[in-house]
Length: 166
Image 1 (cartoon, helix red, strand yellow):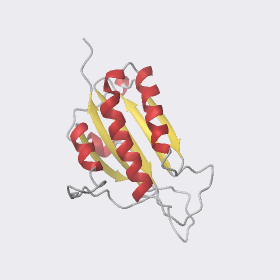
Image 2: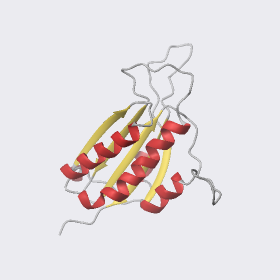
Image 3: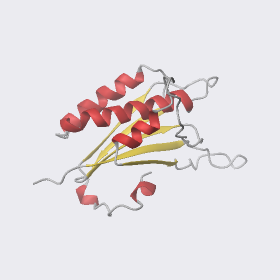
């Protein structure tokens, strides 16, 4: 899932992995608040409270975009198949937040008009994280022979560099 975000960055030593946490989010806008609470609790456990404001803003924007733009409005949801997932992953020198959703459409950063109340989410993600991107999720191999593998949507991620421990 993370191979595309490793491009252009120093390699990650697997022994440096400090933690990861995942949260399934329901297809409701109230899930954004739940994602922020999950982020606060996770960063607190990792001793990264000072990074909460920037990371929570980015998490809020990525989750909001997934809920607003990536979910079909007419498809019924299975309770055991959450449509959106938030992943937080920490290494010694970086923190990644990634939001997986069922859409295969690429996120589009657009210019919002000055009077617009929305449309600046990816601009904020770009401003508050060190870098961001997206890639298609891996496909399921359990599709039928007639239909082939089932598509898995996409992952939109943002990376935050962490200061090295003294």
